Amino acid sequence: MPVIEAESSIGVRGMDDEAPAYTLDEALACLGFGKFQSLVLAYAGLGWFAEAMELMLLSFVGPTVKSQWGLSSGQESLLSTVVFAGMLVGAYSWGLVSDNCGRRKGFLGIAVLTSGAGLLSTFSPNYESLVIIRCLVGLGLGGSTVLCSWFLEFVPAPHRGKWMVVFSTFWTLGVIFEASLAWLVMQRLSWRWLLAFSSLPSIALLLFYGIVPESPRYLCMKGRINDAHKILQKIALLNQSELPPGMLVPDSTVGQEEKSAPSKYTPLLSSTRKVIVDFKSVFSSFFMLFSSTLIQTTLLLWVLLFGNVFSYYGIILLTSELSSQQSKCGSTILSSENLQNDSLYINVFVTSFAELPGLLLSAIIVDRLGRKLSMALMLVLGCIFLFPLLFNVSANLTTAMLFGARMCVTGSFTIATLNAPELYPTAVRATGAGVASSVGRIGGMICPLVAVGLVTGCYLTEAIILFEVVMAISAFSSLLFPFETKGQELSDSVDHVSDSIQVASFR
Image (cartoon, helix red, strand yellow):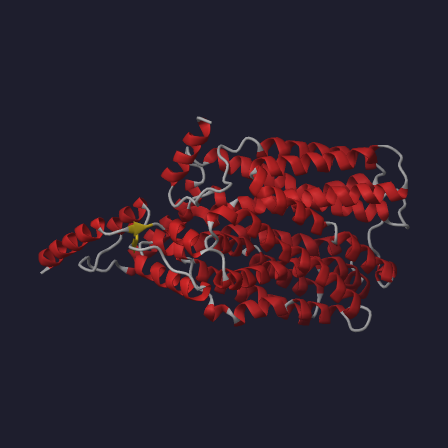
């Protein structure tokens, strides 16, 4: 019986080979960006909106908790540090989960942990419990790179850069919304209410999880062609378009995975052996990042994201320090006395709008100049904006230069974050982007320690020079990526990435 079925399957495959065929990228290009992708954008964007709110609230909750519970400055800083530490671990962990178990299962874990821990932190009875629970929130927030990779896998290649920048707008909207919410809640209710309200977007992710589709690219990579085709049919239905004639064909690597996967005639693996196989599969995704084909991309991406995150949070700090009317040579760390002052919320609210023109500029140039040149250009412009601050300038010029610097760094940070998943094949896309995000989080953890030490020590010039150097190194590293992803189809295998590198080397 197995022989007969094997012969039959060979005959069917032979007929299929003669029929018209199309790839996933060809199908997405034919279906276009329509109502289905808009819904995917809304769900993934809600995840980034939630992350921005959860991070932004630390600026308002920390000083209040410090005053209410009599904490030291170190204890107050720890509230922010543990969130970034959780994100560092979460970015790597959720990337592995989504690459090996599916994007949807990654979403479920992220939504459950973030919403549950976020709401639970509202009822923290003491400082120790608040630190532990906020670390768990950070662990969940680290999975935001999975949402980015998932959305990327539904977008047609020609306009992918533009839509990824639109996706990143949700972050800026989350920052602005959280500042507005804190302005309303903190002076009328308490910090616990702010924590509760800020957890609602994460709860919404969990509520809408049931209708979230799996990535068709992930399904193709796993050899589940029929399931991927069903999702493409749903896209065609909602977008009121049609699939190309013929049948969907996977990347060549899928056939290899199907050969290595157990067939229905293979005895079931024992539970212990299956755990060992799954364990090896998880860590093989990580070690693949250091293969001869991907190691240059991996290391350059780490340098780029570390520098971008370090510069992004550094310029936010400089904006707070240099534009404050109460500045005493950089000593403008928020206190409980000025927390209740409307000027705090107004300052955060207004400076957050600097990100909007940065997003607009990056959206305009990312699909024209390409990812590499766009990032380098934005970082160089950021250095130019910071340069006048090395000298004594007026308060208005200082504010304008900081506004411009934040605009440029936001644009570069956005392109770098969204370019990361494009650089890796499907099998390790979420893992590669997640690990790179973790390295970036290290920059976010180190920046306050270094920058605050320089600023509070009246070394403002040295602080600005440091950010200039970091941004220059990041700009240089962006130009060294082995290939440009503008207008290119997403890679489904390491061999595909290798081919892209070889093509780029001949240009």
